[in-house]
Image (cartoon, rainbow, N blue to C red; front, side, top):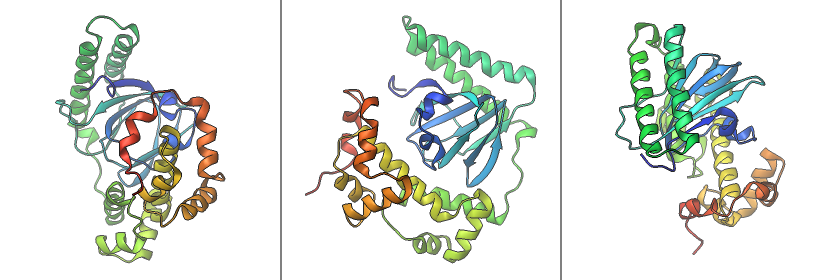
Length: 281
């Protein structure tokens, strides 16, 4: 585990004050375990839209597309675990509604202890944090093994929607049209659109668009790469088309989005992501 990535954050911190960070369909390079303690919300996970509420545990593996619409009173924690860790973690998304009070308290206690280690900065705090996260992993796998948490069989439409969302992280930067995804899945674009909307409340094109916007806004706000480089990286034919696309879907141009984020930046934020995009030849 790396000290940079392993951390406990609140859902509010994860959202970073901007609804798009969690509200747009996206995937991450790390695993995320979410524990909801208060309020109601909606989540896209594993190709389905579902409600989430208090005492719900959600595991999102690295590379899995998800989004969360946080309710006004929704509170909880997110445990960020780097990919490649030695911890034994599930290899697929899971959503657990935990009803046993003792089981709820068990996880809450581990998270609270991990948060104390993270905030106090004691000697060997990182080692202690890793040990607490290991206990969370054990808790999660124990719950998954319970009969009450065995997921109900998926419909054919839900399976198709899941397969589509699994394709998004691999291809969203290619600029490929919806016909490409449909052909890969062996269906027509119309059928794919209708099926994904039935499962998620959004069309396949909506989810693909959200992933591109999330990537674009992240790169604009956390790096100094020129917009033309970002547009090329995300599969746009030209910087002008990229600008029109962002204005249409966010109401602001790339330069305006970047300018609005400047007060939030620190001197060290741009460097880690700089290698993600190749400079123009």
